[in-house]
Image (tube, rainbow, N blue to C red):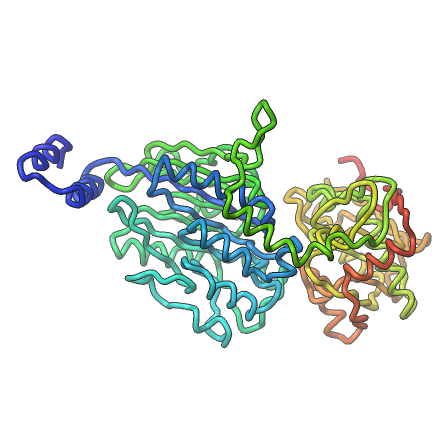
Length: 530
């Protein structure tokens, strides 16, 4: 149907505005180009301090396209005092208010167990899309899970995939969560994280059988896996990514000569709003696209906010801040220098904050039993601390996950295996990279994975592979978190002592005892030339 024919029909039959919308929809479906706008976030990690500006940016973009989809690619949970206090309820309130259309589950959504996650989902006014997380055997989450693509969407439910109608056109949305969640977080054993690629193929087929040929994947798999899926799985038009905290200024494009697949991802912590405008032909094939990241915290030349805080969101945020203000302002120590918790640095090299944390762990553990070394995964260090007074709030933002301190008895061989795992995924800045105390090690990243450690010294003496050592770690690592199966095996063999001390309390006490602190980078971890 041609546009001129539509116009003639409107004039001849005096079609009402509602009918006009229907005619436009038919034009989309039967021959016109379909223009879709996607606004997207990922890895917000409860950084609600940025939400008022984010809400303004979303509202301004909706003025340009009122049919824009607003999507989130997971990891709403964990990372700030807001989450510690409200356990996702405040996040849900803000997401409802601005009107998200769908989100998928990130690995951190499982940090506090099924009841906290279920309470969060129940509060949502929009659906959760999860194609590869099977919760049917989990009595807490199972009642929220629907087994089929719904005819009518409900908020507060989990669907394997959904269909949104945009401008009269069906748009399918599927969601995938990293299978590594089993060791990256704390899901109950009844939850099964199924093969992401296989489930994507299955859900795409179901959607296509329903006549859907515009498909969006909400992916909490990370940038590397998104690229694999874009090249291997047919039928995906757009991947809205998360997990790797990747800042993609422009979409990545795959399959350009056949049926293009786009990958977008919007940085982290709600600092950016992703915007993608995509144009499809009548066969549902992408023909044009334009993607960008909007810096929601940007200032203009006069120093004013480009996106001034939304009044409702700002007022609500101030109300939510009140219960945690006393906690945030309680001084626990001071530092004469800045403490480096930069995400990239703590996951690739020694930092002075990593040294301070592991020194505190080691000192506390030795009050209970002889302990030689301490490990802290870089992925568990979530913020830096500036020079000056340090509050309990500062410590909680550095260590937000509520981990407790445990000790393990490990052989030198097991320690070596743990160190090899620590440096196995440097290119992706994986959270498994270990900050250490009581020891030094050298590694060569040019060597094969599993053979990169070149030297290890424990308390000044060479590592003895047959010797047994006391090692202070957090409970997450002891449970095999971040892929440390060698530590989990020691735990399961009974070589563990749980000190029942929260890690943020351990570090706060350490700061109180030793302030002012001035930890240095001192050669505990040495990267040899490649």
